[in-house]
Picture 1 (cartoon, rainbow, N blue to C red):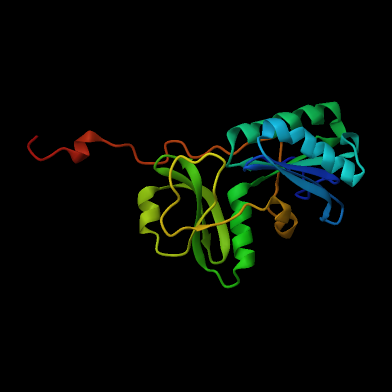
Picture 2 (picture 1 turned 60 degrees about the horizontal axis):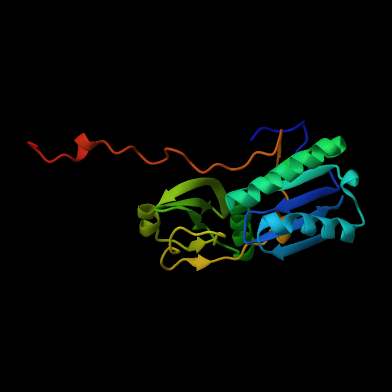
Length: 226
């Protein structure tokens, strides 16, 4: 993601919206990095996004015209939910140009950072979430800090010997890995790790790795003298 402007601090008040999971989250961050209001609604983003945002703005006693920035979840997660949030932000920022400052955060990075915060002394761990059959979005925790979001295959997970965590998604393509510890998703805890949002030029959603795995070449696996 490319940086927007020269500052790394989100413009406030900022509307945070997250449609990556099974619930829609909306919150308004104030100047001191705490919530002016936030709410979460279980259900599909198509039905819940705008009522949740309206209720949150009303609780914060603000309107869209008062906003000076948006903080969004880039994914990974529900493709429909993420895209609806992106389209809403792009529409609002055109209607209210003063709010057209964006920062994004990664749902797995957020969850991994909270695992580190909740588990003092943790050194190495692996957090995964469903992507597609045989492949997982993954973040390793190294020296007590989340590494970059990547893709792991079943073999990597099966050979992992450290703590293993699983972040459920709205739609799963496979069973959670054996012995994985399920973690809940907590976007309301974003202020605890507010260094995670990264300024972006526009609303840029996370794309899971493409062509991550080595291409299978038949000659390598052909029996001798075949």
